[in-house]
Length: 199
Image (tube, rainbow, N blue to C red; front, side, top):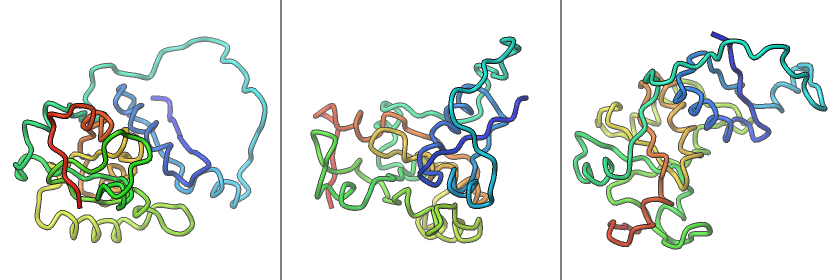
């Protein structure tokens, strides 16, 4: 397997979605550069600019389509398991004001999926933009889950991007790989028949 390393300029906040997507496509050897480009530059890692050289041959794709490396949950699954905490623990990664429904800059409806817990994705990172230690993440997720089984966790956010740092943080904490509801709040709130909670 070719090793893939993903990074961004925002610490590691957004490249984790690419980490998840590559896993979803069946590529096992994916890592996140903790702290992103700024952490790499801080240790004087080499950087290049301009277009990269094209590969000389297409080679064998390192993906294994159909190999289940991550779990993707649909809106129907989320709806079917509402209020069944033994089957599903929803964790919303949006900022607290968006979660509570006080503001909603992107979607036409404010609020959250009933029963969801709130853990802003930014809570996974220290001031330097790197993930907190596994022990610290474990302590924080254990407190948030309050005895719920980590395997029941379904992460979501506004559109399925910023939920992925929570997913990776749980894995770093030794809690296993949880599921992602990629449609997230944008999909959920698009149907007025689906319940909405505020506060």
